[in-house]
Length: 419
Ligand code: AMP
Figure: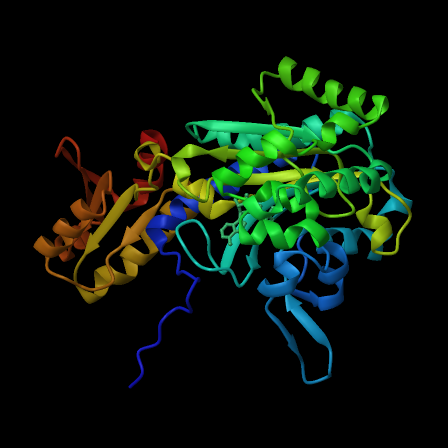
């Protein structure tokens, strides 16, 4: 028989690990709601064309990483490789812009990209992120950056670095790209093969190259887009930095941080942690004032970020994470005790809010005691036939070893008092 296994680049998440995932999820929900963001969930797949238009035909995602197929009805569909385009699609479809001038949305979701798997890079991965649609002002950019930063801060991520830049408005781009192309053409033969292919079509992405030699050459020869942005855009950038200073978010102005797509404008940012190794990006974001229009809506300013949950989990120091240990392990033996034990467990969960694990393997007393110790329960309840006949239980404190007898009718009161 075939042994089925997970597909390359995908992973099972098992209960132990998911304790931490849940903590991350809870923190994301709390922080987003504190900032007035509402959760949005979009379907796992969309029309392929949405991503082609929303992400851009010259990107790695669209040219080689999408999981796309034609369904039985002849529709060309794609598992979502990112969430900004689906959120923008939902914004348009539900005419949110007509209801309110500003919408703050956030998500936690699974994404799919056929990348080369390695540590921190998977084919199914998860992101949390936020999109603020409607405001063109710098305080909105700062709010988005603070959302990402504060989640990482909450989990005490070490060696974090916030890189920040502005690529100005779309009008300055054609002239800038022309001057960038002509400067790098002069050093073309010294650049790596990938950079050479990017000069004509994907010029801005030259700055994404991981090769240190290419980076040195760019430092020396390439003009930076930041140096050609307008005074108004410069003022926008300065205001973002003033707010970040005020709310004590340290950043580094990296003039090489650009986003290669047409609809990006103004602020770009990325948060990295050297604790992560080669795939060091925790999150990326920026302003995308052109996207909603590109998808068929009115010109609408927007800014957002997306952060990888697997990367965050990798960067968290696991020693500081608490596990949800059972409050009570309920030991019992005998047919009759089973019914009463089930009732006691149910009452303690519903009426006292306790985490109660009840024995269902009917093991020996010794084996059940061992199990209570292994699972880390704070308290053990023992209900044997003798106790049942006397209408009471034994409550054992696992840290002190102290035992009490408690009448069955007073269990809820007893545990409400001790909590
Ligand atoms: P992007 O949507 O490419 O801007 O990525 C945003 C964030 O998602 C990155 O900074 C990573 O933290 C994470 N990420 C992107 N691609 C992957 C992947 N293949 N596997 C795991 N995390 C990823």
